Each structure stands twice: as structure tokens, then as C-alpha cells.
Length: 299
Image (cartoon, rainbow, N blue to C red; front, side, top):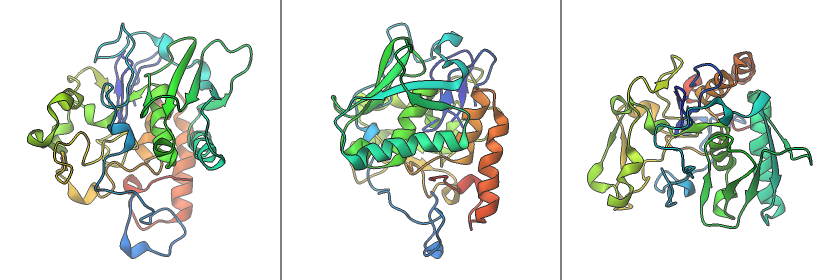
């Protein structure tokens, strides 16, 4: 993911995080068959690489982004779209089962553990907040704080099967867009344009160099904000996105949790980079058999 300079749409490190800037210019699965039996999450714990993620099936901008009227592809230009002090009030209004509600809460817990963002239940005094609903089709959200009540739609059951799907939409609400929007993405992936649906080709547009700040973080195949291989495909059996560094992209499109770069970017955006050390401590304690940039923090 990466962050847009003075913009709202972002994604860095996202799909893939790019983000809306703060008061300052910030923009910031790994699975191995050999690791079966380990208690950490460097296992193949289950997402289907042959299918798109549910948020990639929507008819919104880039599949799951609802753009306000004044916002174009370059994003919003005001710091008012940040959540003050990193506090995001919310209310769950969707008719979710106990298990589905637990998925949402686990996504919130990931943010609390690895970032300085605080998701808390809305208070009567909160004017700006978001409602988590299941009243419409698909998984989608605005980018950043819009003012008043805004919606994160997590349609049951598909959008609340995996913690990473909820975490993905919450990254949008925090101010990030998709990793694939990075201006340098063509160095890392090839778009199979012949197999992208004509009415979805606009979802693969890139930002121009200078519109984003990557904070020195390289492209992130493993970001919770990265599209899957089969996003917006015409032929569902042929990928639309082909990684150029295959060894680093085994889990491209994962929706299990955060990558270390996701965590780094969120904390950079909200001026609390020291919180990223928590993730490094967890990684070093667990001693997984994969490199840090391939490890997924799912708990």
C-alpha cells in the first residue's frame, strides 16, 4: 500500500495500501506446505487462490470504494478526511450471526494490537462515525472520514467469512486505497488486459509519480489491500494479474490479516511509527520459517 500526497485515496504499504495524507505528507500469507503443523500463521490456512475476493466483485470504483462527489481518482486534498487522534467510532447495524460479528471484532482487535488506531463503539456525542451494515450487495466503503455517518457495507455471509476482508474495508475507512494503484506497480505485476472485463479496466489505473509517498516501503504483494490474481476477470480460469516475482507473491490477494508493510504504513500515516515494533516483536518471538515481508499477522 502506499499513501497519496495530499490525497484521500491511498493504498500503500494499498490492495495494497495507499492512503490519504495527514497534516503532514504521509502517505505509508504466506503459506508453506513444509510448515504444516506449526501453530503460527505461516500455514496454508485457507483462501482460494483461484477465486477473486468478494470486494473485487462490486460495481464501485476499484470494486469496493464509494467516492464522494468531490473526489476524483487522485483523492481528497484536505486533512479533514483523517480521523482525529486515530479514533474511529463505529456501530454495528447489520443483522450478523454471532460468528460473523466475531469476525468483525477480530479485525478490530488486529488494529488495536498492531496499530495506534482505536476503533470504539459510537458515543452519543460522536458526530462522525461509521456504521457497519449488511443491507447492500458486496463489501465496500468510503476512503477516509467523510463527516457524519458513513457506511462500511459487509454483506453477509461472504464479506464476513475472513478477518482480512473486514480489515481491508477498515483500511479504506482509515484512508487507504489499493496497492495495485501504485505508480511503480508495473515493475512488480503484469496486467493481463485481454482478460480484464471491459467495464472494469478503469479499476487498474495507476497514480502518477509524485502523487504518492511510499515512505521508502517497497511494493507489497502480501498486503491485505492487494487484489487477487483473478480480480475483474473475463475468463474466470485465467488470471488478470501476474506477479513478476513469483517467489514473493504466493499469497497475493490474501485476506487473512496484515503484512508488516500494512502495519508500517498505517502507523506512519497516523504518526505512531513506534507501534510497528509490536509486530516485529511478535515476528521475532514466533520465529516463523518465512521472511518478515511474507509473514501475515492474523492474530
